[in-house]
Length: 374
Image (cartoon, one colour):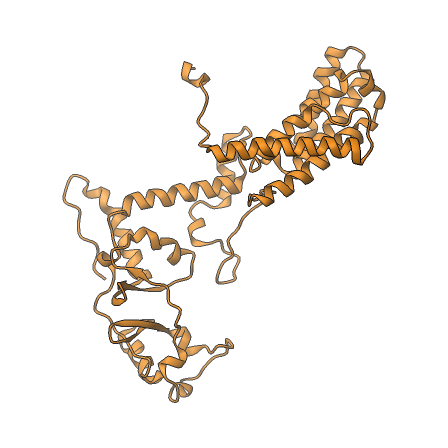
């Protein structure tokens, strides 16, 4: 144990989040109190102190698993029930207080609704005064569940209004191939791997599995950017291009693809890129029906090509394009200098470049080998 272990830990939280969290707590607690007093006509116990702790989580840390709707409602509800039972069964206030919090923690773990303010909810049932004790089981509904529900509704509206993802459920990018496989970028650190690591850790961490996986992927992507930051598209792209023109017969384009054993042809007018023609464009029509070779004899490239083409610039860092190829479904990307076509980057180019970069530490004390030539 060292002295610095007692110092505050950096949260990397900006001023905006601080203001947003504090303002949200004000709106949530003020709104809950006013609704209970005026709209519902509650005279006594219209707002209990533990709601302040719930507001901290709901508005200042909405991504926390401890701040999710199930935790707020069920956690506070079962804690209130444990507190009422302890106060009724144990005469001694000190023993009843300890028992109430103990049972509340156990109940929240069992219901997967751990919510730290639940401990205060249970304790309030014991030491909240004669008025609270006289409520009996009514304390669970009013004020606990009423307060929790109103605060949660206000929190939902506030967080959604600010564009925050709340409830903080799983955010899974759909697979473009409409299969059950996760996106390629998510396969090295799968949910199973995250679960294994969390199980090995043992104790509860205040971060969801989904957020932990997302943070790990972002860290890996950042490390990749640092590693390949000096590699540009022109370093790995194919420069001896096989191209076609909009007026070229589709059958001629098919023969070019077949002869060169490639899967896409940039479509140019002069040196200017106007589209791209792929095997998919030739074989599948706009209604997603197969197109026979005979149909290509009467078609021109202009009628079949894809005009909206994603491109890269020759001096653009390679790491900018990794996600587009891994998760974006791209197999080919024309490379431009200004508007002039100067190359094409394929998945093969990307794989070869990343493979070479992975091997570079072997020559750490020597001159790094050149990138593999396709």
